[in-house]
Length: 344
Length: 116
Image (cartoon, rainbow over all chains, first blue to last red; front, side, top):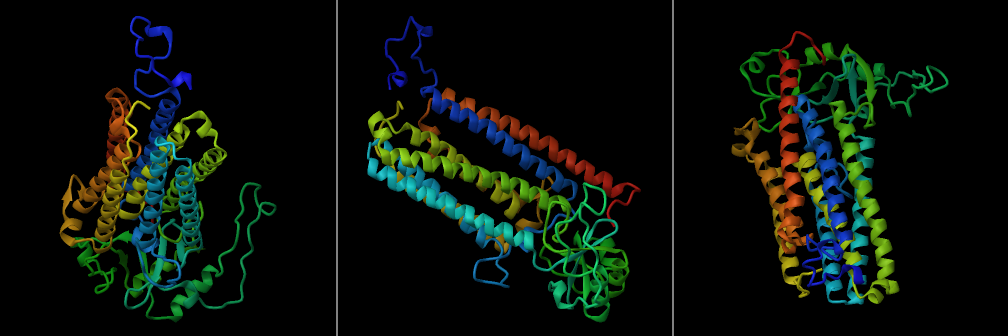
């Protein structure tokens, strides 16, 4: 690799080539500058997310209520644990990556191969975990009603616990026809119908006198709210950040505006609340997941080259270092996504 | 590849320990949400969120400096990577969050009911 060797006596022939003003060769520097531009892309996305969140600060869904699933613990409220696990998996695969780079510096082919392999496995597990997370997010758990004005109404029982649509919806033997592209205008359609019609949910709500409506507005114990007789007098007292629960009369009044049954999430509406929430979730975690996926692919290529002895012949494992930079960057982005989607 | 080729496995595991501990602390705060931190506002954001963001930047520092090995690079490379990012991100975030907050105020205090 003559091109990467810096000649010591380069004074006097600055433009003669072979100079490395930044102390690294061309390939590694370009990887760094790619990372800078990609980091700016991600910060653009996260800043846009922050913008929308500040814009709808009072109605943004609470992450603890949305991401509370854990494998093999169905129905158990376990916020945070699963993403914390995913974070660990990614950080650990970063560690094995940096160990591979370290072994490469010492020209230990066997060790580089093992650590690269572990990194690929870690990336694979992370991708699988993200797929599971998406599945839960898309499927939803409780279901909700969208009003004519576009806000989401969720349902709780007399204790303030969430209630699923299937637990109270009446059976009316009526079916709404699914809108497909060949029925209306060519660009509008829906992928599937909700399991219940609006009437079934509304009638079911009327038949269960202990049910209440929860709006998407985060409750604040202001003077106006404390005096407001439309809000439930007992259930809003919790000091934990929570959504506003209405009285039975007000619930029925709000439900008169019911327009659409929402189950799970898609790019148009989601049962968790503010519509943009699902769009940003899909877009940012999806774009990050795509980076992880390409990272795994590149890791596989480099792993094969390590096993075949390409870098051994080259007497330099610098390619491992370059792909390592990319892999750490993917981990770095996840650290921020984790903070802004799940913690803050 | 001008840096020394000694193995720094020890440092790698140390950084892994730091990153893990910070993540565990973040998750613990995220689950328990102490009321003092959660209810005190500083620059329109509660202290708990400030804590999360600080810890995240702390983690980012270790990933970039130790794992991506920026600590061993020349300072002109370090600056050409870190300076544009720090400046542009702070600038962008400042502008967008202030604007988002302003639009929230307009929606809240205007005569138009936009979500009902």
